[in-house]
Length: 254
Image 1 (cartoon, rainbow, N blue to C red):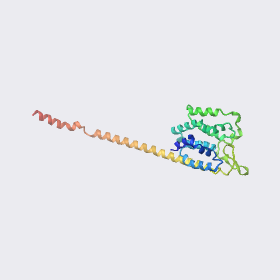
Image 2: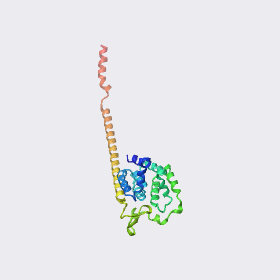
Image 3: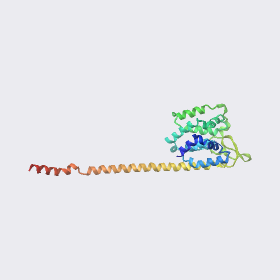
Image 4: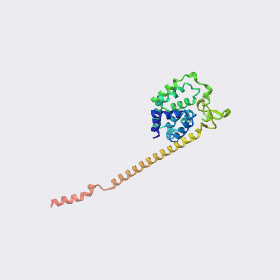
């Protein structure tokens, strides 16, 4: 259901105002409240959360979510949803995101998130070729080495640490007043924990389902074996009927 709602959010023309509000999540209290409200439900689906982050331009958090995915999360359903997202990135809804690729020095977390998705896609898939082509179109002269160093491995939220004068550099080069690991009242560390806990619950649920199916299959096989053994031990019907047939044959002779 979350995946269906997310697709509606990304494509429906009636929800264009909602998308505009989400784009202001980092600067507008109403946008922040909407982002946090949707996050609680959207975190049931990794791809829905990544899409929501792209809409809200919280690219650092999107990159962190991608980095937090484990082997169990990357299944066929995940790749199908990822394929849909890559194709949606080529639509007018995400035109602002594609234009931001012209400033890789400012939107380095966006690049890291997109390259993270690229690394998860099979190389022979159409989505891989689409995203790779888009990233190759970025002018190389606009990359800033110092800015890229800020997004290197380590604490993904070091980029949000407090700077001089009570301000800090937030998502992709924008400067805002805040403290700690939050931006415009959004605590991204708490949101990440919320997402990870929800995904862990889903993993445990899927494991329990798989174990239940396995147990059911084992019980069914055991019952089938027992039934076959009982049929083997049971005397054949013809053998039981043989004496009666013999008596009838003798009676006809007399």
